[in-house]
Image 1 (cartoon, rainbow, N blue to C red):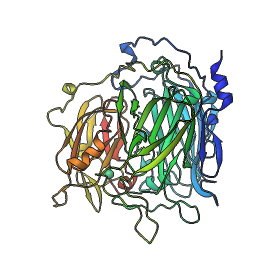
Image 2: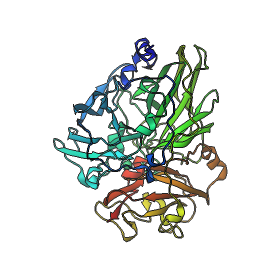
Image 3: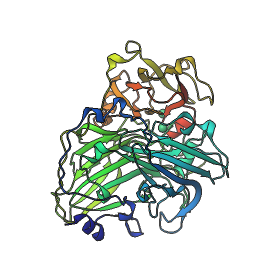
Length: 533
Ligand code: C2O
Ligand code: CU
Ligand code: CU
């Protein structure tokens, strides 16, 4: 029986926006074959996951070629008038049709679905009125393909990217990275998902097709004319008063009583989420930024900072039709108290750390249990701290705020790399991000959390030490950290020092590392590092 096509016809999934009626999400989902027939899980082979999860490009790469424009558009997001946005608009020039999927009725860019080993070629055209460039967040790509601000192009110009997909299966994304304008450009709509699959993941028989659902979470603030209000505070970041999921306000998901794979991206500029089901059902995490965990991990809450991704396995098969749940963000402390725009009399968003609704969910159709989740998802190929060239004296980065964010007392400089920002290609290093306040002669602890991101690599979180700040505040978020997988962004809380193990094993060149609070980044809390061959 072809259960899959029955499911497709019956449209088990809907995402509806307030006042917009039901918008079918079925077309959102990739056209790749849906199969929920129980599968034999192939035994994992230790060669399937090379160190740091990167493959070597093969000569038989399949080319996926797309055109991607950054352009103006407008969408009916709220009742009573369209909202002007900026949007990545894509079209597929070559490759499997499932490689590019445009989200209906959303300002978000297309979802790119690629297989490890394919080569991606992108003709980027900048049609917005300011310089821009695209960064492929989480991917290992050559220096000139990484979207460094020195490569930004003017309105009317184009930039061609071409690189092999080396990363493990996982949920990656792309967004602008021009000098000091990443925050507003992402805010006005420029962002999209890039989903990588591989053979190892396919063998697991995880929910696929319309049961593999990306959820991009962003907060926004609208003015009385329904226009996006970028009321950002340079110290704390931008905070809106409404949560949008996949570009829809008051999003709701009509689901079947089936297992789902939910791919969550925090695509917000500065807001951290403490995700939970309102009925306190625990959350099962199967993947972080850089793909599958070795084993599923269960948490009551999940902390998701800007730039981070997490994939959930959610089995609704025991839920009777009519079951309703809400995915919420619970209240927390230690988030720096950002209040959104307080300047120029503009409306303020809701502060960091207040409870907010994310997504309503209703089971509207009967379904069936799937094959279940294997105990073991992958051999992640983790590295060992003992092999690091600097395990005794980690490379340390002090994160401080003084008017704006600084890293080791320095602000961003377009072309410079300091002597302590040079690493050797192939080296394994321990990096420590220390958010201990002080700096510029000021003692005392910082109150700003910093989601620290390193371009071009996936790293392991080695340890966290709370050395200041409030343990009670810290504990309102720390239970939700998922540190057992590959990461490219790690939240460093006030008073905390976090050590990561990172291997610089693919390309030589100049890359960025920065805070992924986009207002901190634009304010200069970003530096170059150089990988020398
Ligand atoms: Cu997603 Cu340099 O960032
Ligand atoms: Cu990045
Ligand atoms: Cu920061």
